[in-house]
Image (cartoon, rainbow, N blue to C red; front, side, top):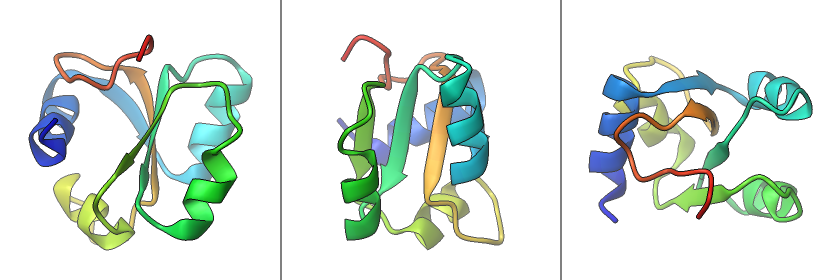
Length: 91
C-alpha cells in the first residue's frame, strides 16, 4: 500500500478526526473505524492493545501533518469513514 496515496485519498473522500484526544473520544463512542498513527515508538506501544483496526504509517508526525495541510504535527488520525482509501474497518 502506498501510504501517501492512501492518506491523500482519505483526505479527499473520507471522514476523519486529527489528534489523539479527538480520536480517543470518538473511539470510546464507537465511531472510529480505524486508527492511523505516525511511526513513533511511544505511539506503537500505546495503540498496540486497542481492538480498533490500526495502521502505522512510515512517516513522522510532522510529515503526517503536512499531508493533511496542517502547520503542526499530527500523530494520530481517527477514521470515521474511509471513503475511497484502503484504511478499512475489517483489515
